[in-house]
Image (cartoon, rainbow, N blue to C red; front, top):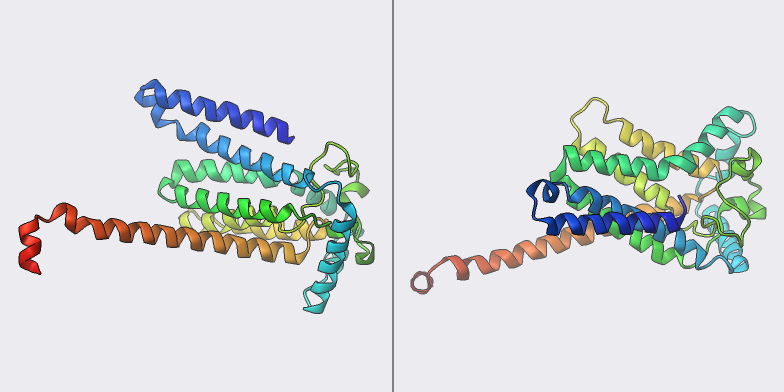
Length: 277
């Protein structure tokens, strides 16, 4: 989905939510969160794509940073993305085509399905998960303003752009109006996949809850094998996710403490407070 369409749909859905809110009709107000939340996610998706365009002309800097990241991973003995790719390419072309398709289509699709499922079936968990996702994505977008080329563009990495090889690439020429290519660090794919996997496993009582973690593992394998991300991209993404969850927990505790501190003065009569002291 182009970022222009994402922003248009975001505006339409948020506008619909405003109309529903001021309609005064209980049924419309009840279902108001559906367009509001979907519009929010579409807005984040559009911003994610725009972040890459802001740095699309700084190719040389992005390549240099990508090379530095590749060397840094070897210094700390992280597994090689080249070794991961050779497990599947070129020996298993059907699997590789599936991986390319998964990378192109399941990132946004799975998040939408997940948020709808969480909102409908486990609404008590929805606000925290939604806020954590939004915060982690926002942090990632700020970092992505510094362009970093993906490993498929790094010559010394000796990796194949598998999507381009099989004519499945969603990316166009570097300066064309195409999805961002220089926003490798950190991986929003991994951030969203970890949110889905962890939450589904934690809140669902179904025997099918393994599908969530399976999506997480599949996404990590796919972004590495297709050479769209480094190991470090996922590690930083998970760190941002933990940071976002921690900030949210601290804010909630602070808010609960403030509310608790105000309760005695609001609920207990002054004479009783005086006697208790």
